Length: 141
Image (cartoon, rainbow, N blue to C red; front, side):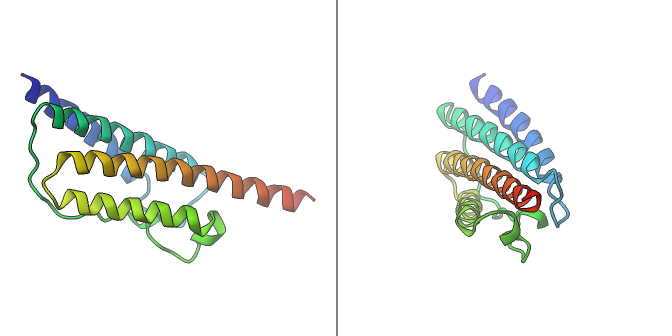
């Protein structure tokens, strides 16, 4: 019964994750970018919790392909205008961690990688909003 509940939680979390990912399909980002990053962070946090629960219930994982983020989340020349390089580096490291974890068999590693991505996406969203405020105040002054 617990494994079935874990499967249900994973399916719910995966649905929310896929929905958040679809929102990032086409660059360059528009005014809703920070909001989409927060939705991605929330979905990653839900995935983290679902995988943690799955591990507690003894749920296994078969290795799959690494995760390749959608275009809007990949390296691009316009990134520097949105947020500092350090925020992008943390985000890219989290993406790489998730990609590596999904190719392995550790449910714990996948949970941790989603947690890292959630934190990095929240931090990036904050950095994007801060940069937008700076740009607006620079234009106003």
